[in-house]
Image 1 (cartoon, rainbow, N blue to C red):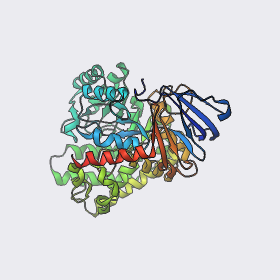
Image 2 (cartoon, rainbow, N blue to C red; image 1 turned 30 degrees about the vertical axis):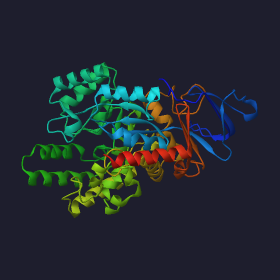
Image 3 (cartoon, one colour; image 1 turned 135 degrees about the horizontal axis):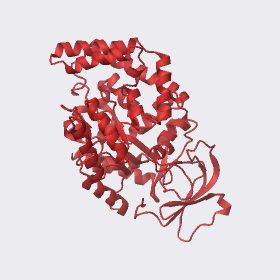
Image 4 (tube, helix red, strand yellow; image 1 turned 120 degrees about the vertical axis):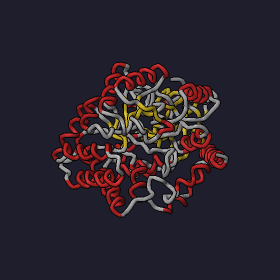
Length: 463
C-alpha cells in the first residue's frame, strides 16, 4: 500500500502523548518521526535526531492517536467524493469500508490512484461494489439480484474478478442463494458481510462465516426463546401478497421477539460469534435516528455539508421510511433500538468484537462528524473509551487483515494520525478536539482542516 505523493519528506511531532490504540497506557513525552509517509521511529525527544529539512511540530499538551476508520459507509456514489472526502479528512477519518454504492470498480480504482498520487485528498477505501440481494431488492439502484444458488455463485465469481474487497449480502436473499454466496466467497478467499437476510438466523450466518453483521441485524431475533416459531411467521409475512396480512404478521413476530428475550439464548449466540470471529457493527447513530425521528434533525448545523439534492430527506416528514408509522410502529422501533443497544455490553464481556460504523451517506449520518458521535454512543452503551477508540483504529485494521499496515502507532506503519488537544481516554468526546491530521505523512493544520470544511460545503451546495 503506497502513501500519498504529497507526503511531507520528514515530520517530527515532539513532546506528545502517544495513544497507540493497542490497549497500552499512553506514552507521555514521545517524539514520533515520520519519513516518506511512514512512521520511522518513536522515542525520547532528546534521543530523536531531526532530519535536515524536517517539519517540527510541538506536541506539548497534545495526544496522538491513529487515524480513524468508519467501517460502514455508502459514499461511493457519483458526485459525492467531492463533498464527502474533505469532511472525512477534516474529522480525522483516514479510511472507510464502503458497504455498497453505484460506482464501477474502474471508478473506485481511479479514486484510489488519485488519492495515492496526491491528486485528491481522501481516505483509504475498502469497497464491496454492488449489494447482492434477492428478488425485489430494497435498494435497487445499488443492488444485483441473485435469485438462486447458480446466480449467487456467478455474481461472487464476477465480483472477485472485478476487484471487490468483500461481498455485501442483504435482506431478501433466499437461503439457497445466501449459503451459495458463503461457499463461493470462501472459495474465492473473499470475506462476506452485511445484513443477516430474512431467511437466515444470526446463528446460521455466523456459522456460515459471515465476517460482520451490520446494525445488529437479526441478533435480537436469535435471542428469542421462540425463534423457530417466529421465523415461520416472518416467512409467512414475507410471502403474503396482501398488505394488511403482511403488516399484521410483521407486528406479530416483532412483538414476539421483544417479548421472548432469553438471556441464555443470547449467551449461547455470543459463543458462536466469538468462536467464528463474527464482528458486529452496531451503527447506533443511524439506528437512533430512526428510532427517535425528530424534525430538529433537519436543522442540524452540520446539515450544510449534505448535498443540496439530498437535504429534503433529512426532514423526517419527507423520508418514506418514516412515513405512515403509527404509535405501535414507533413503539416497536424504540424498543428494538433500546434492546439492541443493551446487547452491546454483555456481548463485549463475552468477547464479541466491534467495529465503529455510521451508515454515512444515508440520511441522518454526516460523513466524519457522525463517527465521533458513534464512538460516544458506543461508550454510553458499555464500551470503555479505549475499546471505542480501538473499534475505529486497531480493530478495524485487524478485521481487514491489514494491521501490519495501519491502525496503530508503531515504526513501519502508514502515518495516518490525529493530533488532539485533549485526552480521548479521559472522555471519548475528546476525539473531536482535533488540532491536526496526518494523512499518509502529509500534515494538515487546523487551518487546513477548516478550509476542507469550507470546500465540502461549497461542493454540497452545487449538488
